[in-house]
Amino acid sequence: MKEKMIISAALLALSVFSLGWFIKAGIDDFASKDRKVSVKGLAEQEVKADKVTWPIVSKEVGNDLPGLYDRIGATQAKIKAFLIKGGVKEDEISLNAPQVVDLTAREYEVNKAYRYIVTSVVTVTSKNVDQVRQLIAKQGDLLREGVAITGDSYDNQIQYEFVAFKEMKPKMMQEAIENAQVTAEQFAKNSHSKLNKIVSADQGQFSIENRDEYTPWIKKVRVVTTVTYSLKD
Image (cartoon, rainbow, N blue to C red; front, side, top):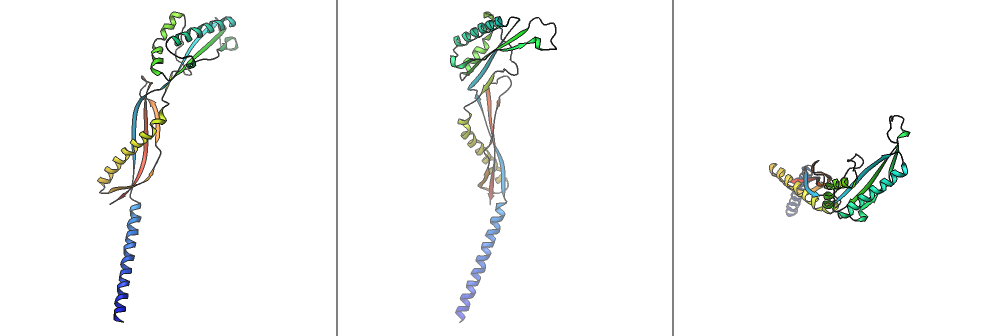
């Protein structure tokens, strides 16, 4: 009888100890769930544009509409010859339909010296950015051919793009997350803790911008990601 009482007491004590241990573990686990740190990781890279769109705008003015169309056609032919001579492929050149403005339809126009303005746009779309940039610098040669190129307007500006962006996304995301981890580890060290698991992470916000206003063919690719880690002792 005495031995049974001893065994029962021992089992009760063990049960109480186990219950206390589980309660403590649960409390510690619950507390640790609230110990988190959210950090941002940044990755940046400069790249050269791999696509250029160059609208070449010319205008003709006069009163004889059929004659203006002939002059526009001759101008487009000279521009196309200039581009092909410079190495641009035919399938990279598109000739847009001429746009005609009849000034007599504008009530506010006075002292009209001519009636029509015909605008022509020859567009170059190419992945050979360096080659096209060389031609842009030489477009003054068209003046010798009697072709006056209109300056860039808001609707017809030279555009540089970086279309191979998708290929570099995984690597940049990895770099951004690694940079976030470095920051999180420093925070954990300062708070006398250690990093545990990643609780959450976003896909990152990517942006592509010109490096500066003077070199629009150089792009700055940037990604910022937010990573949340749990902490442990």
